[in-house]
Length: 194
DNA sequence: CGGCTGATTCGCT
DNA sequence: GCGAATCAGCCGC
Image (tube, rainbow, N blue to C red; front, side):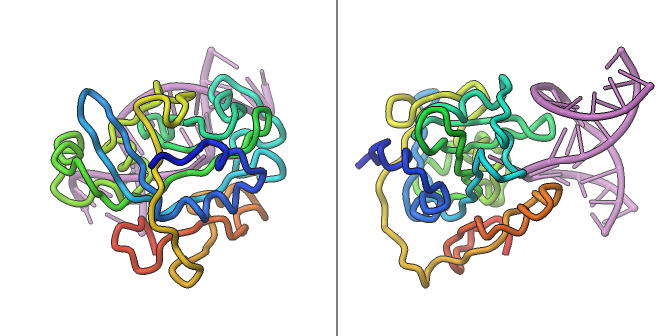
């Protein structure tokens, strides 16, 4: 069952990030369906968070999709070669987003393997899962549930099954780097880093 | 316009 | 453990 986009239009991006654990990300690209359970997320806020691309209402061509209504995909290029998938949250005009950092593969394993060309894990990292699911920057702005991407309801995790930590790779954000805005399923083997 | 940096990953040392 | 790959955005000249 698809998650209603009302859920993503919450004004509490941190809470949304936490609740997304256990849900399923589905992509249907080139006739191939791939499914993964979300096991790791990070929250980014457009206001008062220096780690966010759209902080301080910074509007560029790249961040434009982040200002759309919650339930929109925001995909951007990092280090010139990696595509990172985010789900936009909050209402139109307020640029919050949740970065999906890791998935536990559920369906379409052979397709992921073919896309990735590696034998080892291919969904335990934000750039890896995007490639395995066939997601790229051309999908930024796509509406979840009305495009090749959708998010489905899953098993809700209880607090003692969730680990909270600081976000990865945002040291440049000063004090905001220490915000406890990263969530992952405790003891899950597919989490990118401990 | 040149130079630097990043929500990363891989491969070699 | 370090550097390359490689591009959008930003800052300084």
